[in-house]
Amino acid sequence: MAIRPCTRSRRSTGDHVNPIGPRACYDEGKRCAETLFYDYHRQHNVNIRVAMILNTYGPRMHPNDGRVVSTFVVQALQGKPLTVFGDGGQTLSFCYVDDLIDGLMRLMAAPDSASAPVNIGNPGEYTILQIAETVREVVGAKADIRHEPLPTDDPRQRRPDIGRAQSLLGWQPRIQLREDPARTIAYFEDMLANPLSAD
Ligand code: UDP
Image (cartoon, rainbow, N blue to C red; front, side, top):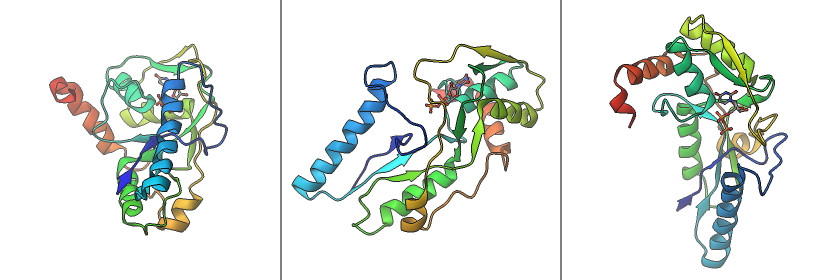
Protein backbone atom coordinates (compact mmCIF):
# COMPACT_ATOMS: atom_id res chain seq x y z
CA MET A 1 0.00 0.00 0.00
CA ALA A 2 1.35 3.40 -0.92
CA ILE A 3 0.43 6.88 0.16
CA ARG A 4 1.34 10.14 -1.46
CA PRO A 5 0.72 13.10 0.83
CA CYS A 6 0.64 16.39 -1.05
CA THR A 7 0.64 19.80 0.55
CA ARG A 8 -2.18 22.02 -0.64
CA SER A 9 -4.78 20.82 -3.06
CA ARG A 10 -5.26 22.16 -6.53
CA ARG A 11 -8.86 21.30 -5.88
CA SER A 12 -8.90 24.03 -3.24
CA THR A 13 -10.58 27.25 -4.24
CA GLY A 14 -8.63 29.69 -6.38
CA ASP A 15 -5.47 27.67 -6.85
CA HIS A 16 -3.80 28.40 -10.20
CA VAL A 17 -0.38 26.92 -10.78
CA ASN A 18 2.38 28.86 -12.54
CA PRO A 19 4.60 26.14 -14.10
CA ILE A 20 7.73 28.33 -14.29
CA GLY A 21 7.49 30.48 -11.14
CA PRO A 22 9.49 30.17 -7.90
CA ARG A 23 6.86 27.83 -6.41
CA ALA A 24 6.75 25.66 -9.55
CA CYS A 25 9.15 22.91 -8.38
CA TYR A 26 6.95 22.46 -5.31
CA ASP A 27 3.58 22.72 -7.07
CA GLU A 28 4.48 20.75 -10.18
CA GLY A 29 6.45 18.20 -8.16
CA LYS A 30 3.27 17.25 -6.35
CA ARG A 31 1.32 16.98 -9.58
CA CYS A 32 4.01 14.86 -11.21
CA ALA A 33 4.17 12.52 -8.20
CA GLU A 34 0.41 12.12 -8.31
CA THR A 35 0.50 11.26 -12.03
CA LEU A 36 3.22 8.65 -11.46
CA PHE A 37 1.22 7.08 -8.65
CA TYR A 38 -1.76 6.58 -10.94
CA ASP A 39 0.48 5.14 -13.66
CA TYR A 40 1.82 2.61 -11.15
CA HIS A 41 -1.71 1.88 -10.05
CA ARG A 42 -2.82 1.18 -13.65
CA GLN A 43 0.29 -0.56 -14.96
CA HIS A 44 1.36 -2.59 -11.94
CA ASN A 45 -1.88 -2.84 -10.02
CA VAL A 46 -0.25 -1.14 -7.04
CA ASN A 47 -2.76 -0.25 -4.35
CA ILE A 48 -2.53 3.48 -3.71
CA ARG A 49 -4.00 6.27 -1.63
CA VAL A 50 -3.55 9.95 -2.45
CA ALA A 51 -3.99 12.37 0.43
CA MET A 52 -3.95 16.06 -0.46
CA ILE A 53 -2.75 17.59 2.81
CA LEU A 54 -3.62 21.25 3.26
CA ASN A 55 -2.05 23.66 5.73
CA THR A 56 -1.55 21.88 9.03
CA TYR A 57 -0.25 23.20 12.34
CA GLY A 58 0.47 21.96 15.83
CA PRO A 59 3.23 20.57 18.04
CA ARG A 60 6.40 19.31 16.31
CA MET A 61 6.47 22.02 13.66
CA HIS A 62 9.93 23.41 13.12
CA PRO A 63 10.07 26.91 14.64
CA ASN A 64 12.04 28.23 11.65
CA ASP A 65 10.18 26.51 8.84
CA GLY A 66 8.90 29.85 7.52
CA ARG A 67 5.26 28.76 7.64
CA VAL A 68 2.86 31.40 8.80
CA VAL A 69 1.71 29.83 12.11
CA SER A 70 5.19 28.92 13.33
CA THR A 71 6.58 32.29 12.20
CA PHE A 72 3.86 34.33 13.91
CA VAL A 73 3.95 32.32 17.16
CA VAL A 74 7.73 32.57 17.41
CA GLN A 75 7.67 36.28 16.58
CA ALA A 76 4.94 36.93 19.18
CA LEU A 77 6.75 34.93 21.87
CA GLN A 78 9.92 36.89 21.15
CA GLY A 79 8.09 40.22 21.17
CA LYS A 80 9.02 40.88 17.55
CA PRO A 81 6.72 42.39 14.89
CA LEU A 82 4.54 39.86 13.08
CA THR A 83 5.48 39.88 9.37
CA VAL A 84 2.28 40.00 7.33
CA PHE A 85 2.96 39.62 3.61
CA GLY A 86 0.98 41.97 1.37
CA ASP A 87 -2.21 43.44 2.82
CA GLY A 88 -2.88 40.24 4.79
CA GLY A 89 -6.20 39.72 3.03
CA GLN A 90 -5.16 36.38 1.49
CA THR A 91 -6.95 33.47 3.13
CA LEU A 92 -5.83 30.16 4.50
CA SER A 93 -7.43 27.15 6.19
CA PHE A 94 -5.67 25.41 9.07
CA CYS A 95 -6.00 21.82 10.15
CA TYR A 96 -4.80 20.74 13.59
CA VAL A 97 -2.29 17.90 13.33
CA ASP A 98 -4.43 15.42 15.34
CA ASP A 99 -7.28 15.84 12.84
CA LEU A 100 -4.89 15.32 9.96
CA ILE A 101 -3.51 12.08 11.44
CA ASP A 102 -7.05 10.83 12.02
CA GLY A 103 -7.89 11.54 8.35
CA LEU A 104 -4.75 9.79 7.10
CA MET A 105 -5.41 6.71 9.22
CA ARG A 106 -8.97 6.50 7.98
CA LEU A 107 -7.78 6.84 4.40
CA MET A 108 -5.24 4.04 4.84
CA ALA A 109 -7.92 1.81 6.35
CA ALA A 110 -10.47 2.62 3.62
CA PRO A 111 -11.46 0.01 1.00
CA ASP A 112 -9.04 -0.54 -1.90
CA SER A 113 -11.44 1.27 -4.20
CA ALA A 114 -10.59 4.52 -2.36
CA SER A 115 -7.82 5.47 -4.76
CA ALA A 116 -9.19 8.90 -5.74
CA PRO A 117 -7.33 11.91 -4.30
CA VAL A 118 -8.82 13.01 -0.98
CA ASN A 119 -8.43 16.49 0.48
CA ILE A 120 -7.51 16.43 4.15
CA GLY A 121 -7.79 19.92 5.56
CA ASN A 122 -9.98 22.24 7.55
CA PRO A 123 -12.41 24.34 5.48
CA GLY A 124 -12.51 27.08 8.16
CA GLU A 125 -11.09 30.07 6.31
CA TYR A 126 -9.10 32.93 7.88
CA THR A 127 -7.24 35.92 6.49
CA ILE A 128 -3.58 36.28 7.38
CA LEU A 129 -4.45 39.40 9.36
CA GLN A 130 -6.96 37.38 11.40
CA ILE A 131 -4.26 34.79 12.08
CA ALA A 132 -1.90 37.51 13.26
CA GLU A 133 -4.58 38.93 15.58
CA THR A 134 -5.41 35.46 16.94
CA VAL A 135 -1.76 34.66 17.64
CA ARG A 136 -1.24 37.99 19.39
CA GLU A 137 -4.36 37.43 21.49
CA VAL A 138 -3.52 33.84 22.44
CA VAL A 139 0.13 34.56 23.22
CA GLY A 140 -0.87 37.76 25.00
CA ALA A 141 1.75 39.71 23.07
CA LYS A 142 1.68 43.38 22.18
CA ALA A 143 3.77 42.79 19.05
CA ASP A 144 3.25 45.13 16.08
CA ILE A 145 2.24 43.97 12.65
CA ARG A 146 4.77 44.76 9.91
CA HIS A 147 3.67 44.47 6.30
CA GLU A 148 6.22 42.99 3.89
CA PRO A 149 6.06 42.39 0.11
CA LEU A 150 3.84 39.57 -1.07
CA PRO A 151 5.90 36.64 -2.43
CA THR A 152 5.54 35.85 -6.15
CA ASP A 153 2.57 33.60 -6.98
CA ASP A 154 1.30 33.67 -3.39
CA PRO A 155 -2.24 32.19 -3.60
CA ARG A 156 -5.04 34.60 -2.69
CA GLN A 157 -7.37 31.95 -1.31
CA ARG A 158 -6.95 28.44 0.04
CA ARG A 159 -9.95 26.49 1.18
CA PRO A 160 -10.37 22.74 0.73
CA ASP A 161 -13.49 20.95 -0.44
CA ILE A 162 -13.60 18.02 1.98
CA GLY A 163 -16.77 16.45 0.56
CA ARG A 164 -14.97 13.27 -0.48
CA ALA A 165 -13.29 12.83 2.91
CA GLN A 166 -16.68 13.23 4.56
CA SER A 167 -18.52 10.75 2.34
CA LEU A 168 -15.72 8.22 1.83
CA LEU A 169 -14.04 8.28 5.25
CA GLY A 170 -16.70 9.77 7.52
CA TRP A 171 -14.01 12.31 8.40
CA GLN A 172 -14.11 15.97 9.19
CA PRO A 173 -11.88 18.11 11.38
CA ARG A 174 -13.00 18.52 14.97
CA ILE A 175 -10.59 21.15 16.26
CA GLN A 176 -10.97 24.74 15.10
CA LEU A 177 -8.15 27.28 15.06
CA ARG A 178 -9.21 29.13 18.17
CA GLU A 179 -9.82 25.98 20.20
CA ASP A 180 -7.09 24.53 22.34
CA PRO A 181 -4.13 26.59 21.04
CA ALA A 182 -2.35 26.05 24.36
CA ARG A 183 -0.54 22.88 23.25
CA THR A 184 0.85 24.57 20.15
CA ILE A 185 1.97 27.67 22.04
CA ALA A 186 3.49 25.58 24.87
CA TYR A 187 5.36 23.52 22.29
CA PHE A 188 6.91 26.61 20.70
CA GLU A 189 7.77 28.07 24.11
CA ASP A 190 9.63 24.87 24.91
CA MET A 191 11.38 24.95 21.54
CA LEU A 192 12.61 28.48 22.13
CA ALA A 193 13.81 27.57 25.63
CA ASN A 194 15.59 24.46 24.31
CA PRO A 195 16.61 25.34 20.74
CA LEU A 196 18.63 22.14 20.17
CA SER A 197 15.43 20.08 20.25
CA ALA A 198 14.33 21.86 17.04
CA ASP A 199 17.08 20.23 14.93
N1 UDP B 1 2.75 34.57 5.33
C1 UDP B 1 2.83 35.81 5.92
N2 UDP B 1 3.90 36.06 6.76
C2 UDP B 1 4.86 35.12 7.04
C3 UDP B 1 4.75 33.84 6.43
C4 UDP B 1 3.68 33.60 5.58
O1 UDP B 1 1.99 36.72 5.70
O2 UDP B 1 5.79 35.41 7.81
C5 UDP B 1 1.60 34.29 4.44
C6 UDP B 1 2.02 33.94 3.02
O3 UDP B 1 2.06 35.12 2.23
C7 UDP B 1 0.91 33.00 2.58
C8 UDP B 1 0.40 32.39 3.87
O4 UDP B 1 0.96 33.15 4.92
O5 UDP B 1 -0.15 33.73 1.96
C9 UDP B 1 0.71 30.93 4.06
O6 UDP B 1 2.08 30.72 4.03
P1 UDP B 1 2.67 29.32 4.47
O7 UDP B 1 4.11 29.31 4.06
O8 UDP B 1 2.38 29.06 5.90
O9 UDP B 1 1.83 28.25 3.65
P2 UDP B 1 1.96 27.77 2.14
O10 UDP B 1 2.28 28.98 1.29
O11 UDP B 1 3.04 26.75 2.11
O12 UDP B 1 0.61 27.21 1.88
